[in-house]
Image 1 (cartoon, rainbow, N blue to C red):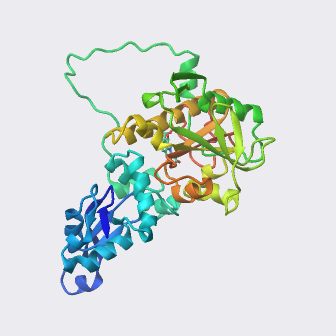
Image 2: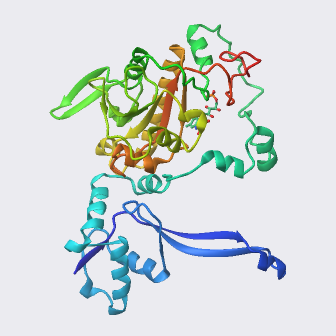
Image 3: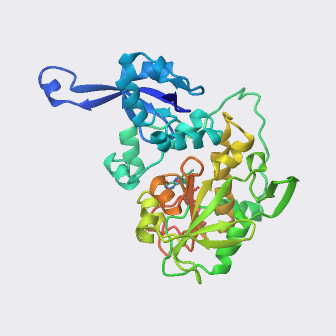
Amino acid sequence: MLLRRCAVLYIEPRETLDFDLTSLLSGGDGLSVQRQWLALAPHIGEEVEIDVAACALLGNISAHTWTDTKNLPEETRLLWRRLLKQGLLIGKGREHAHWRARDERLRELYWHPLGATLQAFTRWQDNDSVQAIEDTGTQTVPEMRQVLGPPPPESYVDGDDEAGIDLPWATGNSFDELLLSRVTCRNFDIARPLPLAMFSQLMQRVFAAQDKIEGAPDTTFLKKTSPSGGGLHPVEAYCLLQHVEGVAPGLYHYDCVRHRLAPLSAPAMPLEELASVGVAYQHWFANAHAMVMLVPRFDRTFWKYRQHMKGYRVIALESGHLSQTLYLSATEAGLGAFITAAINEKPLEEALGLQPMSQGVMAICGFGWRGEVMDTTELDPQNRIWQSADA
Ligand SMILES: Cc1cc2nc3c(=O)[nH]c(=O)nc-3n(C[C@H](O)[C@H](O)[C@H](O)COP(=O)(O)O)c2cc1C
């Protein structure tokens, strides 16, 4: 039979240290050390523990040309069979279709191998980021300082300070006012629905195609209000709407050309639960009137930037641009906005019906009316949003 190594594979020698009371009582350092070889293959998406013999065999089998197993040493038979089952080796036969399809899909997407690995292995399933902060005792700034020590300084002087040129401070105008009024919102007013016109205006400003350019047959570029690497605009807006007037709570895909919402199937769990799991249980974001999941279609960017070292970085940066445009548009409209990258991507991918590795959730933004009272802290030192008593 014929087999080859999967397209992308990194092997990590991982060392885990655990507290070990027995070691401590017997005069040791109180630590037990565990070492493992872990295979990280993005088309599998789960770490696979392997042994040294498997490392060696995987290193000796091509990922490009097919190897006839007749040419492999007889004593490796059990091993290559196991690796085939695990998906680290790809077989040509029908019984290996499952992993072969996933491996072939990954090959077609033109990921840079490091980018693919980062995307595949940094997705959360059920992470509770609020609990994590509690567990590490870093809820407040004094606690953070206590546990983590002092941070690197907030700014620093570099270059020839003696020859420094003092720049003139400009008088602020309405644009400065807008920039300074941008404060991440962690307090939404769930009792006050967001008018459809406001929701729609924000979507139009931030995510809609403002123009369309036919570069060549079947090769169309869109103009939007945020920049995009290669003008490819791979980031789609998927909405989780909870309090938008005239729109049933649910999941929607936003069609950026037609400025139109298409409902998706209801998620398996209640919508509020998905919203909460999605933002890793950050209750201060979970009830936002409108959440927008920034969902890149990686293959759109990688069509041009094939196996490009900067491809993944470009898409992450673009998501940040969209978020800033959303923040400013929301601020201008008198609304609050947020972004979070502390998200449970896997349940979101499932709920939105995304194809892992072709698409993903890069971050979640949200917007809506601010509440009357600041229950969760916001960074508003100039009291532009909150009166000092609230702050
Ligand atoms: C990429 C990114 C991720 C963020 N993730 C979170 C988050 O998970 N939870 C949160 O409460 N705020 C999050 N924020 C908001 C920051 O905490 C906030 O920008 C920062 O405290 C400065 O406050 P400001 O935005 O009001 O100026 C995030 C901001 C950025 C840019």
